Length: 223
Image (cartoon, rainbow, N blue to C red; front, side, top):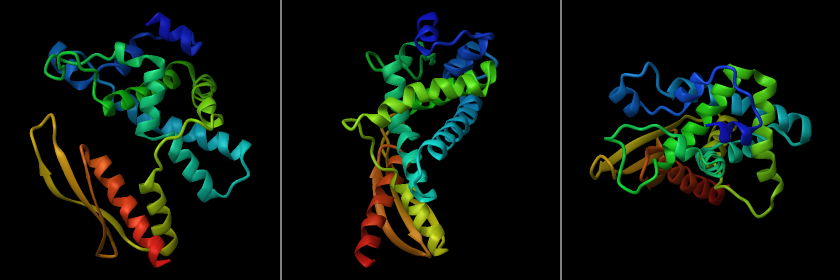
């Protein structure tokens, strides 16, 4: 992991917390290790949101709504997966035998979660100033490169609209099929008890994004 630390330009004090950041629950269960990455992921998600809010507030003169959209674009599963891939985090992830598939890399969602967990570990180990510098060194070049785009966070855009209009919003799963390792989910987005969109995806999050996308298209037509 020394190569990664050099890439991140950090000098860890507690290397054990970084092992935790890369430990999937399947690995923890098989090896009787104390903790998996999930608590650090929860913290890292909040740290990423704070750092990007801080950066956008300081460097951009946009409205709250616009800053929210920009932050959602660069702090989402697709973006986190790209950051993790560029850093080569896949080779450090510890998963149990049951989660491994011959010749396959860890699932996209796991890789994205590990990036958040790593940021949480840096925050705990080295503090806010250090993790802020790390995050900005990773993300700002993406923001400044016009050739790099991540998918729009349709859920955030829809949530913003609903809050403005003071309407209720709910995502309801209507179908789930397929084997455990290859499921397909169908999700409705319901606004004030009316179905505005239906999405299908290989994860609940993906299906929700698709449903939100269709809802926004319908609302744009109405507006």
